[in-house]
Length: 95
Image (tube, rainbow, N blue to C red):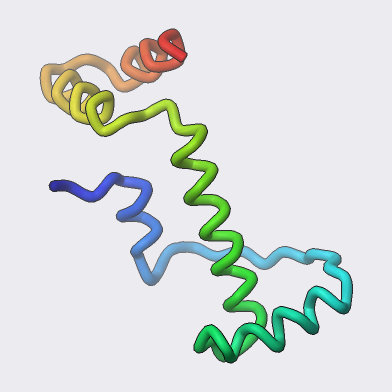
């Protein structure tokens, strides 16, 4: 069983990061500060990242146009020389 490329990239420890600014109500931040140690986290920012990751994974699974079978087919066709742009166009046409 192989790990999808997206997951492999997410598991890399040295991937590029960016800083963002979010406006979050103080009571929400206070709640996260209280919950974070109960979940074994050092601070609320780690908990916030966890919440974002969980939601993102759920939505990616829900809205992804790729299934494991399509991924295997695309890999096989790519090995046979079918250009990536043509593969992506075919997947778009099926959704």
